[in-house]
Amino acid sequence: MFRRLGVSIYPDHSNFQEDVNYLEKCEKLGFERIFMSMLEVSEGKEVVFKKFHRIITEAKKRHFEVILDIAPAIFDQLDISYDDLSFFHELGADGLRLDLGFDGNKEALLSYNPYGLIIELNMSNDVAYLNNILTYEANKPFIYGCHNFYPQDGSALPLDFFNSCSNRFKKEGIRTAAFITSQYAEYGPWDINDGLPTLEMHRYLPVDVQAKHLFATGLIDDVIIGNAYATEEELVALSQVNRYQVSFNISLVDSINEVEKRNVLDNQHVRRGDITSRMIRSTEVRKKYKETNTKHDHTQTFYRGDVVIGNELFGKYQNELQIVLEEHADERKNLVGRINPDELVLLDYIKPWSKFTFHDL
Image: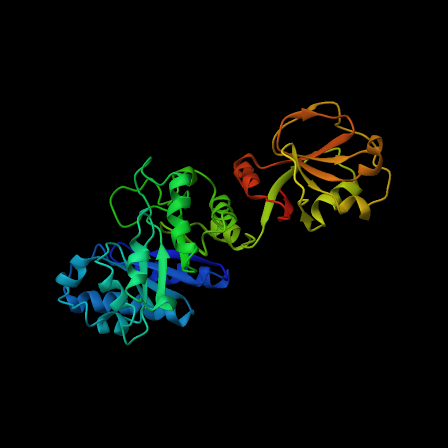
């Protein structure tokens, strides 16, 4: 399933022209999806329609998919029936995210709405919610899943729980989404804003690292910035993330030679299928580079996340590239760089035969 980037818009808290400017930047950088919250609406139906239709129209001009976040109270407030979703269709939305669920049968019926609106389910509960809906013969191609975000510091999901919740959707082939948080954006839907991530471990990480991690899990198809507005630097960094394989940011040592530099940066690396716990081995590069690799930075202890290359003392393994997983020393290897400390979590996702690359910081 192809992977996408998205941003969030909060029409009840934002300025229309600033929203449009934000969407223009995001469109140019390849973002494709918008999460738009209706949970905070407090005005009448006509006012709400005008406000949301205006910004959704601008979004659709720029080819964004727009999903509206709604709750049962919205239907009551706007005097809308669950059996008639024409209001949301007329707004121009592509789908509805159900912040709170129903009985399974209702969600299944909603997925057959005549407007082809996507029905997006809350993924952040490790219960058989999705399975219940599917047993009612839901219109599966029109079912998405999306995690919650968590504005309060310390309140977001732990990784093991996130994995369990996400697996319930992924094994059914459902498109999935989760949130990352800008470190500079100033608001979300509520008056508490300690960031808006799905995973607690992401709350204070750079946005590109958060996205790399979500994509690396293989459980998330759409990564959405939860708060608004991310900076242009953050948007650019996100747009450059490889969505289909891990690309590590690496700081190269000053003494790296030209052959080692090409080895690190100019190759598609592949972890050997017969793995070891001490290091990740990229072995094909040693066949490509036959030059003598003079030893340097080879007498120290190597630590997790260090990138090393076999030197002239290493015989047939000269010029093999390795990423250190377990602390060890070996004078037959040269230290050539260190992976960004924020990205060490990504090492857990380099499995047998995984592909990976490096980007020089």
